[in-house]
Length: 218
Image 1: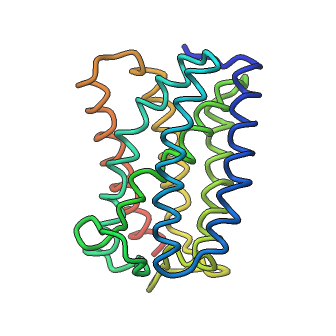
Image 2: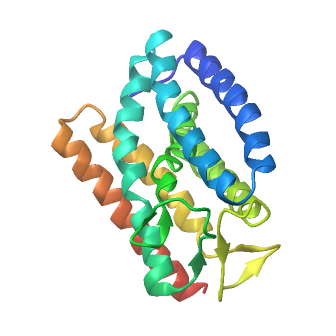
């Protein structure tokens, strides 16, 4: 069972406070093609500097968690691809960045981990990691969904919405965080093929949860 020290929690909080204090104004002040390139560079910066911080500060488990979640982050845009191409419930504005399958901007491969890593890492510093990750995941993705439209990142369409964000993804997104945390705690020290299989399994689970949520909530 992986636990996080008080020092590990402090370092993670400081890193994310500094990173997002820089990233959010850059994203808000960028428009059009500049926004696409800004998000692409910020995603790359996060995925370079987070493991460097973990290595520099001696958080080996934090580095391993990043290595574990990165394949999942790369695989998750396939679920968005499904929502765009098959379900027609999601659309991404064109910011001039290459799109996976002509549907999902490539920078989303590096964005999912920006929520999953801190949620999984900080939850393990508590007595009830799964409860904390569920509540934290719901709150984080609720904020993310609410901010997406004014930031022109993506738009939901032809589904039930409140204040401009769709309802159906919220429970699947919470389950995604729980599944990622459970997989990490069970298989975080497994071989590379097993970890890759875990990443694909969680991505497929998430896509299925989205499909059922669309059926039941719409």
